[in-house]
Amino acid sequence: MYDLNIEFRPDSGKCLYEQIYEYIRREIREGKLRPGERLPSTRSLAEYLQVSRSTASLAYDQLLAEGYIAARPYRGYYVCRMEGLYRLDAREEATAGGDEHRGEFPFPGEMTPAIVDFSPTATDMSRFPFSVWRKINKNVLSQGGGSLFAQGDVQGEYSLRETIGRYLHSSRGVNCTPQQIIVGAGNDYLLLLLEKILGRHVKIAMENPTYKRAYQIFDSFSYEITTVDMDEAGMTVSGLHQSDVTAVYVMPSHQYPTGVLMPIGRRLELLNWANEMPGRYLIEDDYDSEFRYRGKPIPSLQASDTQGRVIYIGTFSKSIAPAIRVSYMVLPQELLERYRRRCYFYSATVSRIDQKILEEFIGGGYFERYLNKMRKHYKEKHDLLLEGLTDFEKDFRITGENAGLHLLLTGRKGQKERELILAAQSLGVRVYGLSDSLVGKAGEQPGHTVLLGYGGLECQDIDKGLALLRQAWL
Image 1 (tube, one colour):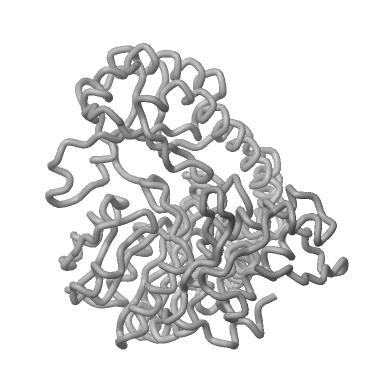
Image 2: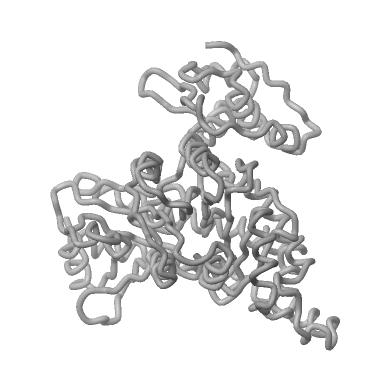
């Protein structure tokens, strides 16, 4: 174990914890910190660097979340093993500086009105800046003239794609040009477009459980779908080597519905798999990466791709509003050429007016301010729900915390998923089963996990729902 000689740069514009995080991350990537090497404790690092211990802890928390380091109880922090995996192109270091709903949840029995609905797909629109949106709308219509009502660029307005590209690079580390971005009305449309680009009868792998809507869309293409099991790090790459798929659909930053965050080692394994043979692609669905409550958002899988293997798909449905229905897809250069040959005649599916409003909303800084406010608001609900679930820990294992808009409860005593749902329903509380997101034979097995969403609930509703669940389950 050695001291970390980090030279802080006051002019960098970055917090101290970010500079510590980036320094250690860079040292690990360049092999200067070796796998298995022990790092200083947060206390000793804080004393050595003359910073607060909380600053050192924030940096370590981010490295833990991304899988660069691991914490061993009573022993400290150690560098994770990553050698022999996909190697990042040196140019990356030199230049470094679904949408509307996740899943369909049929509720058993009669759909009677619920007192409290823990829907994992609901969002909170009570704090949306409607006055700002109306003002932008008015300005766009008054200044745009008749040109806004003409047919626009098939990929989306160039200025909006520039704005999206800058946002993705700063927030998610995505590396792309505006030419690589396609704007569409929802993820469903983009997946339909992707079928035209990749071709028919593609063999594709998906996590299990997964986003059921995407599964159904791929199935409608007559794609041959292989489900691959997951472990604590996400989709197992060994499962891919046992199949002959050419495309993989993954949600590495916050897997739906399990909430698993794929660490850097597994991400590099996936990129290595994709790079082993030509024609292999990874479809990254980054549906709600903005809502992370410890550390900063995890960099995208696409940010580590230097060989053009990742197709990146994102949406504004969670971060702004479901009714916005604006999603975007970033294509690798090779597939961009294919798109232009095969899909140039498809018209844009988002009106130019809506695109211009969204561009002004993002470019004017309103989106960033709204996101910051909603992160804080959702974190309050997240923390309230976690605190209220303390009484449940004896009977349930709680997972999926620190990101997204839902948590998972798995019965420790063999409680059946359907029995839990019906018991909650009898008291007017609606919860949702994990089995709704399972496909194939796995979905036929009795489950033991339910999802509790909190995005669409007020704090008093969360308290009320938990009180009723205590009566139903404990």
